[in-house]
Length: 170
Image (cartoon, rainbow, N blue to C red; front, side, top):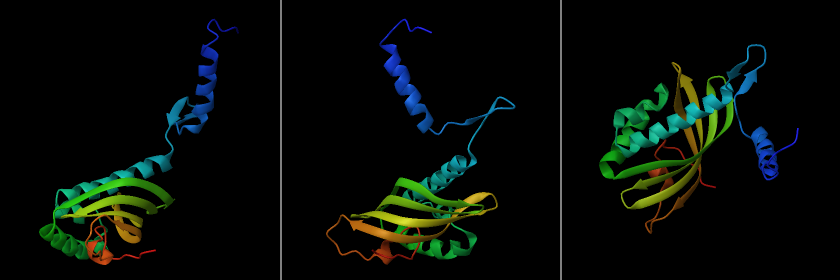
């Protein structure tokens, strides 16, 4: 086959080199149908759940925020969140999520989020453990790895952790 337009060849070659790196649904050879990688669907669900938690926190939606957590931790989180919602203007934005481990009904993700409580702003990096309850992902625990405080006030990480009350600084 001869190409009519010689400048088209480098563009086609570039496309062919990039396409294998993209995570596209694989073709099901016997049926000719597309299938979606289930791990990428789960990772998308996990990211969506963490974003829903941050939106509920920003909206000061206590029920919505508490519902993002496992049943076993919900009462504790509800109390902590209620106090923060009353004490502060709250804004939370998930900046990046990387699913580290996904096994059955449990997951571990590295999450970077920005948290603003009144005039104090924090960039937080944490490991978040999630469990699936009744078909939905729920936050089970958070282990804070790093907090960068952008305000002049002194930071008490355990006081300001929003997803859960436990933290570790490194």
